[in-house]
Length: 290
Image (cartoon, rainbow, N blue to C red; front, side, top):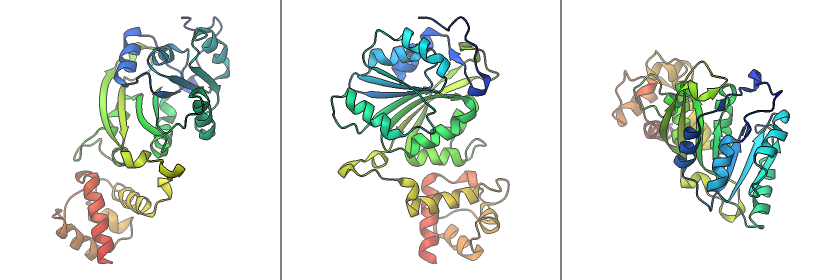
């Protein structure tokens, strides 16, 4: 497989860092749990090195690459595969329904409900892509290479300094696990920091597409209220939770203290001390008391 075209130059503004460790590529594909029945979406295939591993294991791969100059190289490297479609587009702005239509065409018009995502994400848009994938009800699992610091925030436990809004958002939509730490030496060009691979398994109710009705969770009032509460909680991280919710969230202090007591929360707790279930219980108690 060709690594690059002779005149190819990595585009720093696109966050291009290609994996050059062949064993790592195989490990990522193996750990993703992809089988011959799976439809796989890859974001940012680069030179197609990981794509090849995914094609060998899956029913079909759709690769979305933003860099037009990489298209000839991708097509040349992967020309022997018939279960591949390559799209030159920005994933963040591309109509996802086109992706569904392409998969369904590859599946001989079979309706596609679940898609697995595997990607080596550019650092500068990691959070945007993760958020979009979490909200998408067609995505059932994600195996993502991200900056090590971001991975630690995703899988953090309550009480730690890495625990925060990103952790809780990921927990709301999925079960997360840290698969592996990846040295910066495994990339070309070599980034300044190490990376990590994180796996997301979406909760069943998030990917429920029954009755052909795509559920837009971001429009759900309970979801909006919960994350409004969470964002207010972490807005003044060094302060007591009750003070953050009063000062930023606009909540009544007496109501909060009663809710804390009902749920056996210490009055001095901070935002990072509560789990997702704790925040759900807190919101429910506050709502009942109003």
